[in-house]
Picture 1 (tube, one colour):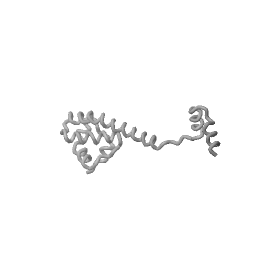
Picture 2 (cartoon, helix red, strand yellow):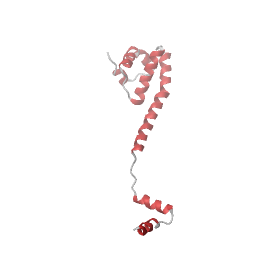
Picture 3 (cartoon, helix red, strand yellow):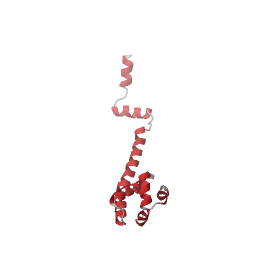
Picture 4 (cartoon, helix red, strand yellow):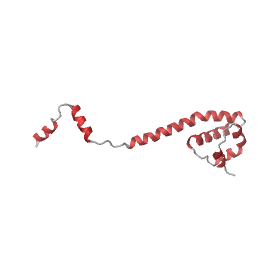
Length: 119
C-alpha cells in the first residue's frame, strides 16, 4: 500500500505539473466573497457620491437663504435621495415642506422627493 501511494505522489516530476493537473480536475466555484465585495464597492461608490454632492447642495441652500442647521439636514436628505433614492424621514419631510420655495430656488427640487412630503 505504501509503495502505491509513493508511486502516485512521485508520478509528477515537477510541482508545476502537479498544480496544472489539479487545476484541470477542480472546477472553479464562484466565491460568495466576490459577490459581497461587488455590493460593498457599489455602496462605497454611492456613499462617495453623497459626500461629493452634499457640500455643493449645502452651499446652494445657504446662498438662497436657508439657515445653516436646516441646510445641513436638507442637503443630506437631497443628496441621499439622488444617490440611493432614500426617502426622507418625517423630520426631513417637514423641513422640505417648510423650505420648499428655497429648494426650488436653489434648483435642487426633485418632483418625487417633494411629492413624498407630509401635509
